[in-house]
Image 1 (cartoon, helix red, strand yellow):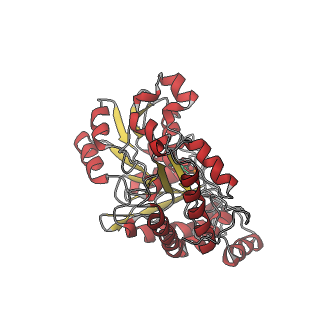
Image 2 (spheres, helix red, strand yellow):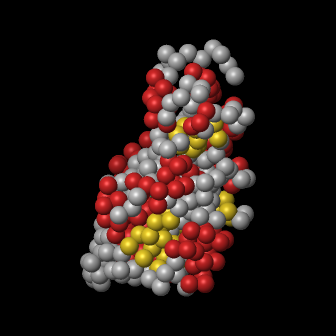
Image 3 (spheres, helix red, strand yellow):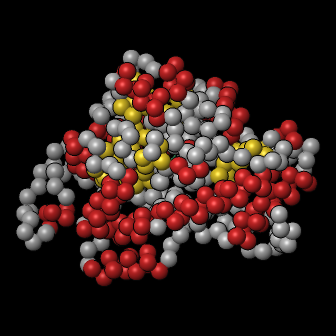
Length: 392
Ligand SMILES: *Cc1c(COP(=O)(O)O)cnc(C)c1O
């Protein structure tokens, strides 16, 4: 451990997008082309993304939330249906279920992986369950084998919330074609970004077609085809759709980011291994469970504090790291603790004991490809220093 790190150096941000000259040039090219919204770049991005993850169809959208929404629309989710989602996730995973007047049925997660617990899924199944939405927490694949088996037996859909999972490997293949739908996010902090954006992947032709139509006002042909010289002015509205299409500006960013995806992931793995090496043997901390490190996207590094070893709580720990120049975050505030879910469904904190307990001791450390070696050492020094100073 280097002892020459000064906490007076510039602040280490929690996340920073890896945007370079190539992204800037790609966006400029689109600006100069005169075609800003969905067009050739979006189609190229869909084609390259589908080929990369090994999916038959990829539909480029303006958010990961839109992808989740369209997947549920495509299966015909109805009022009073139920969809099983982990309590330990971002609100997007569950809010899309509420768009339909259906019920998100929360279940607890596995304490080791923080991924949805298949045994809890089994217990939550009912005659009204229409789908399961596992989240690949932090970029570590959920137990799709067991979840798919449960879904198959019941004849219901699996919709993966893969917002953290590009690129995550599962069973020797990249996440993207294992289930009925896989939904990716390109939000600014995600592993590849288009500022805002998302991608829905499916191997089912009819599902893909429905999602494409609903992503653009329920129109049966997209604007790109409509306005091309050889195209026609005619279109038909076949359903009350949404406005979820990805712009060419965003897709131009996505194409460059996708070509860098491997390099960025490999750097995040290096960072994770340095954190593991420095913190893994320290009684104050529990390092993330990761299985095969090569299979992990390493979107997050969810460190957990052994609170019994501390005189301070997690939020004071975060303050101490900030005072030492380190930005952190918490993933996640479990859904059942938020006022909306608490009031609507009457949840109490202890209803999902694992989510509740792990939330109270989780701190996500910075992990992104632009981090310098010095910044990594500074994070490690700040974590160790805080543990020493506030040891119980
Ligand atoms: C970011 C995120 C989403 C939503 O993605 P957007 O592109 O921001 O809509 C959904 N689920 C999880 C777990 C996320 O982290």
